[in-house]
Image (tube, rainbow, N blue to C red; front, side, top):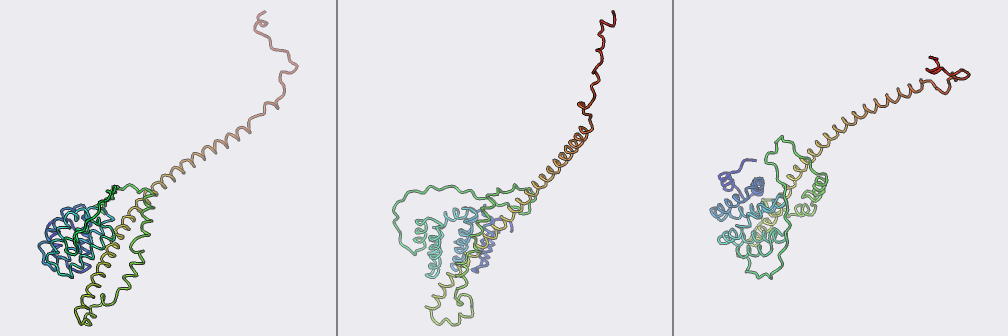
Length: 315
């Protein structure tokens, strides 16, 4: 992907359209640069206030796509957007028509269902948007949050620097998590397959004869867009996860090959040592068999007088 700069970000934001493909492409580019989430969101909020009212909804759809699809990568964008969302919804709510407010309110409902943010915070966003009245929440005990360490992706995918092989348990855990991936979500795929033909075929728009039918179809189209955008985002995240696991497997296999080569070399070394020791053992056994048995020799001293001593010789 292309490198990040504020000017490049402004150009991309100004060129974004309301199409699903355009939003997802932009979302993936932003998630790739999530380490710069703070300046990205700052520019997004600044440009949101500049664009025409008709394009503000597109900016909010982009925000939704980035927040939901970046959750598995890390909290950078959810934290960064959290500082601006109340002002953003209030700004958009001032100029938005009822249809736009309904679309944004549906996004907030999805965030509430999926616990993207705290319920109290989402209720404040609804108030800022103008789709709800202030809600008084009863105090509750503060949750103890366990810090989660997110793995950093390598910026340079083509780097030839050797990487440490993953821990086997970590690799197994990552592979098991793929069993719950988006491509295995039969329920969502069934929902997508059962979408009415009216939201997929533009030629059927000619059959709309009154405003009530148009508004009903608009509601269906917005819901379909959110469903498809969310699912496509999950698929994109799954693709990144599979690439990461593929690298993990490659590193693991490379490490195992190195260990295998080292084990084979060690095995060959000790095979040679065993062969040498076996040869020595064989030679020693043969040598022992060729030595005379001293117990079988005759008694050479039997019947003979003992040899004289030194004193006897000089008498």
